[in-house]
Length: 320
Ligand SMILES: NC(=O)c1ccc[n+]([C@@H]2O[C@H](COP(=O)([O-])OP(=O)(O)OC[C@H]3O[C@@H](n4cnc5c(N)ncnc54)[C@H](O)[C@@H]3O)[C@@H](O)[C@H]2O)c1
Image (tube, rainbow, N blue to C red; front, side, top):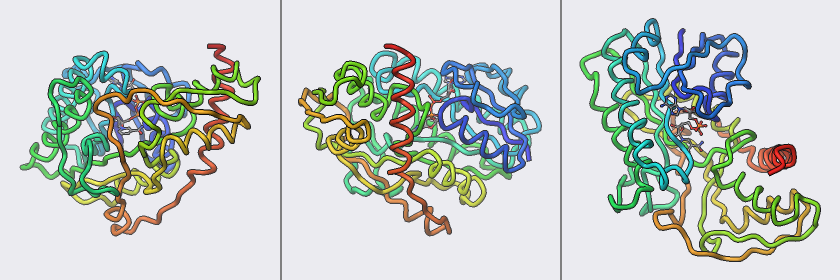
C-alpha cells in the first residue's frame, strides 16, 4: 500500500508517518516544510518539498497513491488572527487540489484532518459528531481556520462520488506531545512558567492566563491519537466523520497547576481578558469510534510528564 501524507512533516504527520511506515506501508510526505520538523522522520520515508497550493506538482507526486491523507494546514491560534488570508489560501486551495488528485488517479481512500474547532461553542459537551458546526462571526479572523475546515469537510463529502473511493474525516481534539510546536496551550503555559520562574531557577512564580481559567479542553496524548487515526484509516466507514481525542475534560487552571507540579514550582495565576472566539468548553464524545471496535487507551498523565520535561529542556536549550 502506498500512502501519501500532505503536511506529513508536522506534529501529527511525523508521528503518523513513522507509525504507518513501521506497519509496512510505503509512505511519501508532501510538505512545504514550513514547520521544519522533518529531522524526526524515519529514513525510509520519502520526503518531497511540495506546496499543496501547487496543483500541477501535487497531481504529479500523488500518482500511484492508494491512501491519500490530507493534513497540510496552517495551524496555531496566533496565525488565525494575524494571517487569516494565508490560513484560508492553504486551506481552500489545499483541499481543492487534493480533490483534483482523487479525480485524476485511482486513489482508494481519502482521509481528511478536520478539527474540533468546527463545533465552536457546542450545545452539548461532551460533543458528538452530530453537533451543529458553525461560524458565529465572519468578521472575526479566528474563524479563518474553522471556516477552512468546514469547507474542506463539505468538499470531501461532495466530491468524486462517482468514483470507487472511501472518504473518511477525523476531527482531532487538542492532541499534545513533545515537539508539537510552540503555538499551543501546553507549550505556551510551560513557556510562561519558564520565563516567570527565571528559567526554572525559582521554585515559585506568577503567570497570567486568558479568561478566568475555567475554560476547559480535553487533551489527548499523541500516541493515543495516532492509534485512533490509524484505526480509522483501516476501519472508518465511507463518508463518515469521527472525533479523535479523549473525553477527560480539564480546566486550563487545573492544567496549569498540573504542569507546575511536574516542574516542582509553586504557581500563582492572574486572570486577563479572554480572546473573543475561544470556546468555553470543549470535550469530544468518542462513542462513535469505540462503537466501531476501537480499544481506548488514555496515557494523558504519563504523556503530560514526558511532554513537560521535553519542553523544559527545549526552552532551556533554546535560551529564549
Ligand atoms: N494537533 C492538534 O491537536 C490538531 C487539532 C485539530 C486539528 N488538527 C489538524 O491536524 C492536521 C495536522 O496538525 P498538526 O498539529 O500536525 O499541525 P502542524 O502545523 O504541525 O503540521 C502541519 C503541516 O502542514 C505543512 N504545511 C503548511 N502549509 C503547507 C502548504 N502550503 N503546503 C504543504 N504543506 C504545508 C506544515 O509544514 C506542517 O508540516 C492539520 O490539518 C490540523 O489542522 C490538529
